[in-house]
Length: 575
Image 1: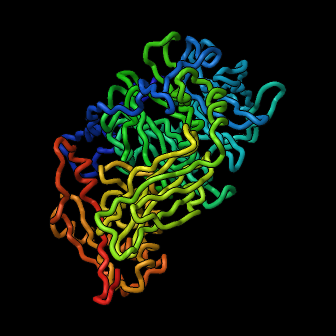
Image 2: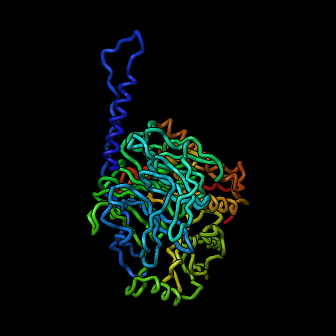
Image 3: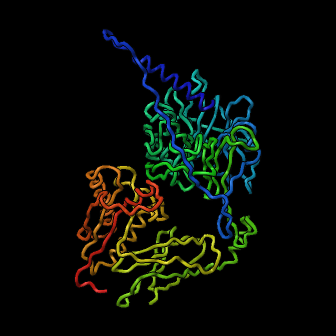
């Protein structure tokens, strides 16, 4: 049923229930009984640009959006697509209206090279569901989790189910179907499930009471694959709004959650948003921007890989009604002539397996012939693989394997460190010049936390421009701990100055900065830094960074939230 009609019936039913519940007990008379008003839905306006599809520079990736061909799209409503492994490849599971009566069913289709698909075949089921809708496949338990409408008198009562997806001749069948009773609510829409990569958390959409209004996202946890699901809880206000939030999914690496909403700040209608996810903690929702999001509705996001992102939209297209699109990433070789992956392979095969990294450490004065260290870390292994001194001019070079990402950094005992990320997954030359490294006297780390939180940082640090960096906070503290240990022979103390943004009172921010600095100190102690070396001072909101011209409030506040580190040495310190 159309989402807007379904919401109308739910609101009407809610109003009737509210009126009945206001009936006074005996011997008490009320002059009037007014049902509570529905929550206000007031989305903001977004102008976010997420992907630059016009970037065609040779040697870089190109992003382009395609409408999926037949048989995936049709002149019916093609609502959602997910994938599951099958016979060494990927099988598409399509939720669509193909029977001519607006009933919804699920179909499978083999994903072929160059985004072609095999014939679609309806998934059979021994259950006589009215509708079978959006689904997600859980690799850890091998079950399909899906939305379905049983035969009953309530047109809006959709529930969550799971089943084994087994081969049935040339197609697939749902077997051992189980209703997820602890997650389902009577007279509610409960559907559109998404499973975390470990299969221990499920997120789903529901219009039950207890949320922020409209359709909200709820989640439940289980202790193991064979354990029962716990009582569901609504996601926080960083995700849910008084408007609708629906169609969640987890990213291919499991570190993000995507979903659709007509709340928050939207370009128009339902937009797709993302949220950093870790241990059932979701960061503030961010609009993924145009050109994926448009004035039309964009729903049911699904990331198959870092180069294929699928979603559904009712924007005008070659097929009528709702259609499924894909954002694809391809590599443009340095000659700029061909975009096919085969060309990329040919070009990359012409680059030797060993790449030379060259660069320079910038320092005003190199005193007493104490030269900086330069190190290389393998990002995937999170491990240092090489280290050397610079020459007297600050120059260095390393030989590394191509096909990986590396962090190249420099440090000195009397200072801190600087790091740059180098991506050699698609190298364009056998010699790569690393941007200059500058070793700071005062180190600033922006380990970002959810609102009023002091112990669950977001996964990645914030850089000096207020943008999410490529470095995890754990890696930053690993580097800091090593820098402190390298200075230990002459080190008297390390001062940690905690800073917050300007929101809230002085007292509130002083305490918050203290707690967050204490969190960092605790993590450093866990990395072998003696407690006696660490001294904490809270600056609260009293020392904001200098505001840049044209800088947004959000970026300015992000740059203000930081912990600064200063090394103090004994008087006998030598350079």
